[in-house]
Length: 183
Image (tube, rainbow, N blue to C red; front, side, top):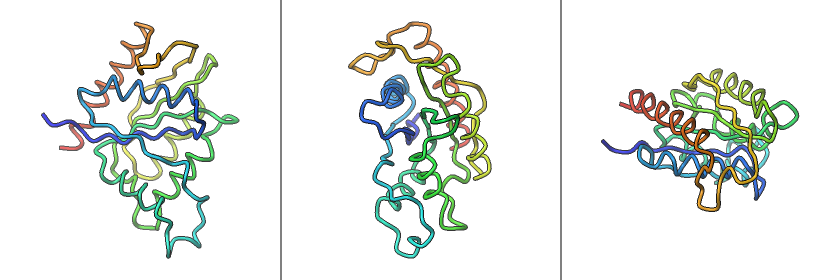
């Protein structure tokens, strides 16, 4: 069985983002089922409908990468009980122009990490609402990860056995559902 093309979007533009570390670990854990690539979003201009007639290349690249994927994995922090501006900006660019929404029909899974006990619960909820409104097929389930130093090592391995098993189950379920929907 061919691997599914997975586009991974990290909702942070921070160089040492713990969500980027988690995303890289998820890519490694899912390597048996997914051919994954990280989607760059930190070079997108702020969304402005005035730019649509002559869209910047970075926004066209974003749409191509989302449209080429069988499934999308979003790994995001939470900023002030909401999704980060860089992520919302990417969502808006990919949903435009009107009638050419790249999210429609895409299988999407959402997760994120923070140092807090509830992880990124609020931003994930908001993200699910936005993506569902854009006709994405958003997987249910709650995947909140409390990040502690050393949880992901330099080789992108999840070092905690219980967390690794939980994340592997999440990815296995995601691959099963995405595979059925992509067929």
